Image (cartoon, rainbow, N blue to C red; front, side, top):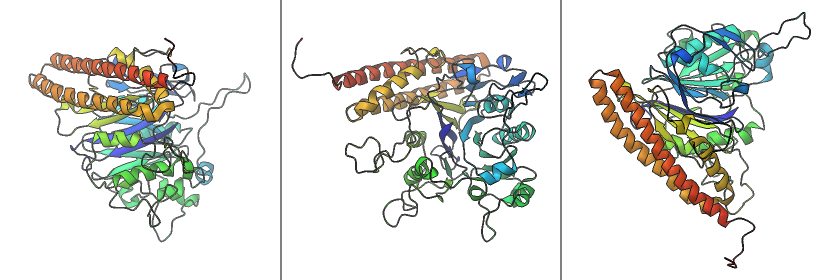
Length: 494
């Protein structure tokens, strides 16, 4: 799965919240947003792709999930926030190199060749990870440690990056080969940008094998690097990206330009991103993984990044005049995105409303981000009642329709799209302000049922608002697209 991830430390955000976000670019996978209750969590998990069977701990927590509507390839839960207000997004597909994969091969399912043999299960992967981890963790660090134990026991069949956040910390974890891994706590003042590459460009081995304050890794990682002569670094510096990642021509078209675009937005004053004296270009391999932004970052900034298509540059595929560079690089907001979420954990909010999940279906360039409260027994049908049949009765398919209609008539239709996106954000924030206060009052009375009722009502109003704005926008954009049909003529014949 090709995705883009943005992580925000609590000191880098405008309101002291932590944020983890990712576009799930899964090949037009139809998605929905649901709540998984403890009774619905399996006791034993079986992967569809790898056929791995994994027993699960007792007493799982409630959590939100954005699974595939068609389960034939597995759950693919993608992202969520659990009852302990811990967020998770999994996974960002990342790159590796032949040296690493030869030393620690990926664990691939092997079907028996005869009746006398048995199938050999593969490892775990993006299909499985949220279900295996999120219901059982109470901090972001615990998420790293639980997933690490699973990777070491079962292995993985792909290279992945995984993010966790709680009210204080954000952790980023990257897999290395079939069984190894490393993770870092994101500096509070920083934003991390990950565009489908092995991202970490620094790691404190002394901390990882000592106090473990901000660095964690496989217990044998030092020996793994030394025994397989993986270290390419000079002068004693340790750059994990050089050791475990890739350096290919395809990276320069598909991956590094996205990092350049995001870094350019976050640090326009601290670094030079354009012109003959640029420190970094779209094809630079050394774009920092972690940046201290020039100003505080709000949810709207993360949305802008995840919706990016190189606007303001010669590479924008929607430029009216082509200078020879239009559409050269892979955009962040693309046509095949199924779901995008921002898991925001607000440290200054009451525990009952600490977590907010900003959900977006379809291409982020044209879709709206809707905030919802995750601490509820179920999600409104407008978000959860999705089938593989196209329908304007849910946000997923309506978002896909808006994107498909807008794309060919971008110049004339983008204005109603932007008005729609802003309307959902403004009205969504207004409802959050209203129901934060109502939920705090209900929580103060120590009445869980009353609190749950308030949050359920809030989500219903948020979904109703989204439907109203989405239907209005869809009508406007359909009219605009109809005006630009090829079989139109100026002569009136009505």
